[in-house]
Image (cartoon, helix red, strand yellow):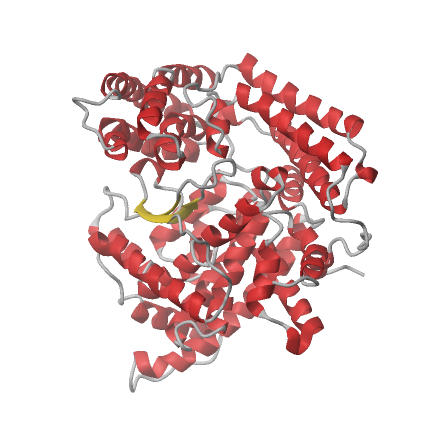
Length: 588
């Protein structure tokens, strides 16, 4: 008999020995030393990776992206995987150490699979964009070093950017068109960043800053790169962005690390999609008379139910702000959400609060509407950034209007819960407290996204917005999007699903605006398997909550439970049942 996705993810590792000591031992110490040595060797070869994780020893250097250098990265990873089982005895580790061992082994295995089965440096110009801007942006926004030191390191790195551009021109061969089109937009943002944005971040002027001369050289190099992207690479961009069924299945298995197959995920997602769609209709029907007094409710058939939801959402979408007020609206939303969390003991919020709400830099736009850029694992006292993106400047008035309608006052609240409080920001702050360096650095996207989606419904269930049906409808719409992500992910990469079919699915069935749907289709092509993490992760968190609450009965304390969930780092969700139950044996 087939085991459901819910059971497989939540029960996960029920066969593990629960009584094994969680205390660190000598073998644990050896594992910690092994991983530290691995990171040291990796960071010497990949300075930007070091900066991203908060290790600032190599902030004045930048990666060599030549084929020979990249081969050395792979050799180091392969050697680490071979040495891990030779040098560390899994059986002698504490239970916590065994989990760390398994996470490291899986991460090394996945890294090698990606190298052998995908060719990002040959196919994806976005890889180079991340080096071009990330090499300085990381230092100016996520480092606790003195600003003068960061500026000096930025200047040193900027001198190496023309080499990154040269590597891109030399290596890029068979790029899919959508990759190049996105890279063109981001490179335009990168030019703007080095013309002015970097000086704003550094708090300096181009005329007097140490960054002035290298910035001019970078801008000249990037303008030449822009010509290469537009006039050379784009005309020959005929690569296939689809992974295909076999590669998608394997990549998803490695991405999820939960024992689930791609077919199981999409089947469960389709069933959940139908359930959420029905629930949305129930809520929309209650809002109909408020939205359209005296207007008859559409017929109770498939088309009529869809029309009911669409029309109510369209009516509610008119409650939106202005482009220039988007950042202020987000900040006021954050204040309301945080107040509710404290008043209702959802969990204890990080203190001090290091989350800053910012407008998304132009060079990072075109991929998502908002993101949480958390403090680095190795520099946890740095700031985290909740970034919100205004509509691109080149959009016409019609597209801007649909964008604002999509991210209206109701949706902005759900987005803030997901990205910041108590979603990504709060969870990742808890994660940075975890003593395991392996779990800090090798974090699980399924855990992170699953927790963020779980909190959306949880907050409303606990009384946020006092039963506002309009907000509930938008929460369900946002969750329907998470479920649809898994369906879209599979269909785009495993079938001949066209852009037209995807657009119709997202606009007609998932109730997304045209602009948002176009962005999601591009994202599905650019980031295979990531879109499935939301649904699978949320399923794990939601089902575990139900099980633990049933087990504890009247003793169940929601705030205590949430902190027990977050207490073990951002690790694969299959380990949660064991770890949460063990943590709940102890006082809060």
